[in-house]
Length: 340
Image: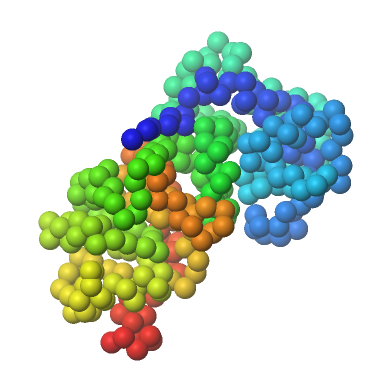
């Protein structure tokens, strides 16, 4: 099994510097204001001057912009980063930024210089330690925004190929806005594993848990067996599942009927009719997260982002709560489908 570290800022030094350069900052802030309340409406730029083409290419390579013909538009990552730039520049200027027309080259230099100052100041080593600490207390709002920006960029720069081929943009907006919370996660890749085989690390993750929250569209008999062991040991399990999976769970190799499900007071299923864009398991100790490929039909069963940090667990719990709140009780769904 291969582990790919996504958190080494030093190795990403050149890329981070180019993303935070005044030219790249001005390209991103040069996009017009969004008219919608979400991150799903791409905004095409009218023109990016040739002198900024290299900066635009860097932003494309690291999923901040997309290129279509001769035009560029923001990805969801780009929309989040642009919003954080606005907020940070407002803090630095001491006033609210209203539109791109308010900006000058001095503003781009100010924002870029603040983001890059970590490399030049005598306190840079301390900043790096704080960046990786879950207990950091920021002295000002601007420091907190910079922390969020660095987390987002480090996550992307550490895993560009992964996010390039996976449908992360199917996540709800709030999850993308806070996805930098996953910065300390590690990408696990095991080409020998597929969903029909035993995922040893995943079974251990389940067995160590006191509670398990999950979102899924598929399952296996092996995983079901491990979860039943967990239930018998006293673990509390709540799963948000698709309607298709819900109908399968009252048949072998899962439960023979709904009465077997009812035997476990510490187990609850919730059924959603929304498209589930991830495979998520978050426990009191671990997070395991997988995505569909860009076709939004093929689940990637050989890659997972895994983590134990508090921020990753909070992100996972917030996503679970979002889908749980938009789901119906398992038995209510079965009754509607005529299966009770």
